Image (cartoon, rainbow, N blue to C red; front, side, top):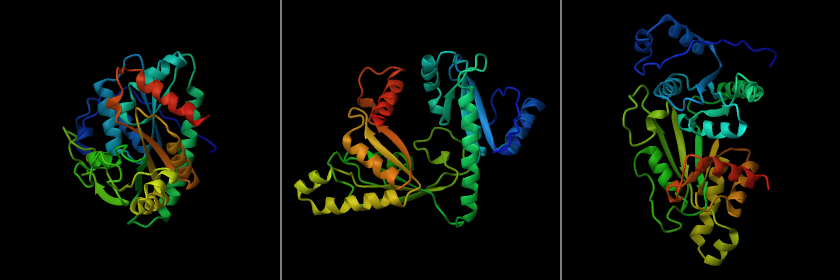
Length: 305
């Protein structure tokens, strides 16, 4: 990448989430219209928030607006005023709910600004590759996301929660899901976010979610004598192979197990993107705001051992 064109905008107090034309018409000033024009013309967006002010209603509103109208843009959430690297991690955790890649920075003293530039450059490079691949893909291509993990970590419950209805059987008994189950859905474009029981309206294109059988150690499967389970492991691995992204579900109280590592290695071997989903978070006692930060660090540390 030879050069970057950078545009700065004036603060936006929150953008109406109605239709695109109505949103522009209701903006309180020409400044916000200019900010919108800058977003329209950009390939990458640095969404800057105040790390000392915590999460505001305007932050949520702008995040929803970006996600709804500019899902094709590369968005980085830069949490400013994080002077201390250690404290910055905790400041960033407040903004995770916005759903963007976040980075603590200090525009005043400099920490994190170099990493921000690196992230922008790498994101733009990936975006160029993604656009090239998109041009080569069939118009009917549907991105696939498989949900994998050990038995009974809640894979089917997660799929049902995303789709908003019971597409797969949920049971505390291991092995309820015997085969890879494909589910396609599309979120309604332009629908009011409102009080929804699912995340369907967040997605503005069709997705294929693949629920899979729980993957146990070979020795455990062999000793159980279950032919059905032995056969279901192969569909789980095939589901990984035909996915674009794999969600590896782990159980909060168990953290990362040896079997989770084996599954992660399989995902890496297949060259797939991996998202670690920590389920059953409610089972962790005495949680506070820092618990998620420490948990994430434990997961990262365990991966490097």
